[in-house]
Each structure stands twice: as C-alpha cells, then as structure tokens.
Amino acid sequence: MSWMQTASGRKFSFTNPKPEDIELLDISVALSTMMRFNGHIKDHYTVAHHSVNLALLIQENFKSFFPQDKLDIMMLEALMHDAAEAYTGDIISPLKFFLKKDLKPIEDKINQAIAKKFNLTYPYSRIVYEYDKLICGVEAFNLLHNPPIDSFHIELCPHHRLLQRKLEMDVDYFEFTKKILDRVNDRVSAKKN
Image 1 (tube, rainbow, N blue to C red):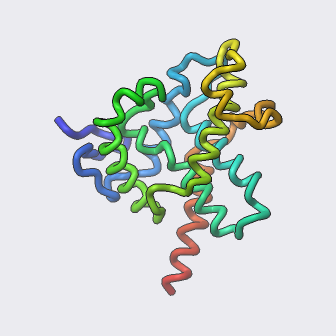
Image 2 (cartoon, rainbow, N blue to C red):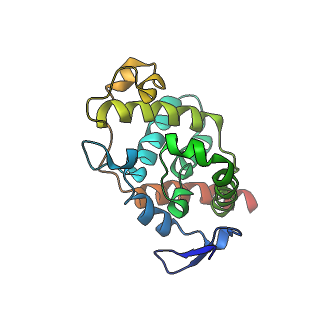
Image 3 (cartoon, one colour):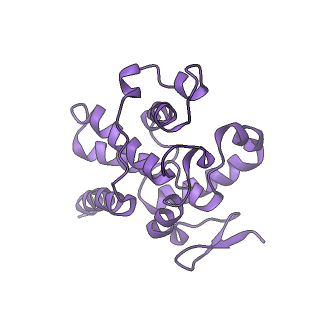
C-alpha cells in the first residue's frame, strides 16, 4: 500500500503526492501531535511548536531587512519546512541520516506538492534551513533533560544569547499559518489582477 488516509479523510499517495491532496488542517493535526526529540523532553513541545518558533525567530531577525511580503513568504516557508512530516512522521535526525537514501526522494516529492499548494518554491530559502539549525539548538538547550554542552544540537547554535530564548508554546499552528497564508494569497491574487 503506497497511500495513507489523512485526518480530513483524504487518500494521500506517497508515490504521487498532489497539491490537491494537501490540506493545512491535515498538516496542523499531524504536526501538533508529533513530539520533538522523539518525546524525550521536559515539556510538551511538538513539531508544530518548532515550526511556529522558527517562523517567529525569522520574523524577529529579518523584519527590518525585508519587505513584509518577502518576510511573510519566509515565515510561511518556515511553517512548512517540516510539513512533509505530517505524512512521513517525524524521524529524528540521527536515524534519518541512515534512511536518507530512501526517504529523501519521497520527502522531496511531498515537499514539492506542499510548496505548489501554498504558492511557495521548493527548496525553501537558505535562511529557513540555517535558522532551523539555530532553533534546534535553542530547543535542545531548553527542552532536553540535562543536555551536555557539547551536544550536537547546542553546537548548531553558537549564539549563546539565543540559547536563553523563551520558546513560544501558546500559538496555534493552524491559525498562525492561516493568517500568514491569507496575506500571501491576497498578494498573489492582487498581482494577478
């Protein structure tokens, strides 16, 4: 079987993912139930929390460098950068390394369908991937039980002031993403007219 049923009842194909089979609700439901670090953390912190915190970090650091339309796209990319995991599951990085040869082509197809659905370009901005590493370090420092200072994740975040960053855990992924998506779609529609 090469498909799964999503929360909204859609039949989602792993071998032929289509933008019309992608739903923000499905992504939101799945990412909001997947724990970061395979659940080995001090607090309830999900992939949805991670994506929101990445988007907020990008907004904070680039709001004075980019116009709002570019910033909204980067924030939406941040919110979607792990969206394929709504269909594949969140496989922790050390294990993903061993599965990369088989998993990456599947994830890439899913990410391309997600990007097309939400008027994005895949692969996403380099800034999104760079800041994903930073927020991962912040999460490791704040969430892991007694993280060693030489931890892989801490090394990803050399900016020690960032390690003290408070992680946002009260923002609803679906509502936050929908708000940014609506702004992006309004601009896309305005450009077409």
